[in-house]
Length: 139
Image (cartoon, rainbow, N blue to C red; front, side, top):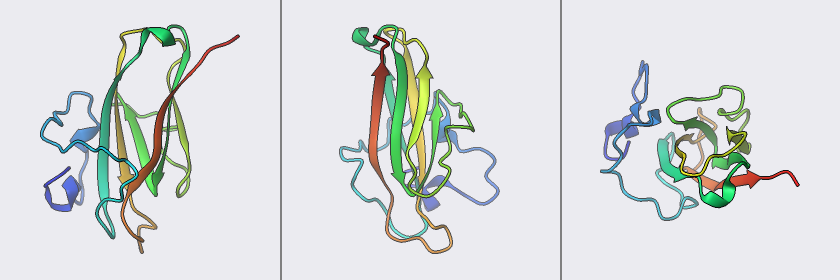
């Protein structure tokens, strides 16, 4: 968490509040460039965004796709799908289904935890290569 020692992560931490949908991130700086490298060495950071399904995505299968440097977790509305929400390898892309049939006006709070690796000898900072919403419709 910005401004806290170790960016809010401590030994024996049982839960990290920024994953929660109702976490107040209003005091955080706004990230205008997710590709900008942050911090250095062994570091963690949270990226959070609230998205609302637009009318034109009505009924579409809705996905959140991302790729982070180096390890990441994607929490949607405070929950993680452990089969798709955790990166299975360094710098691997992630694709998380938000809805099999999107409903306009539905909001999703997406929180991404990013950590630099390899953990025993991290190189550089952290960033997100991309973060996109994809709406797939059957033709």
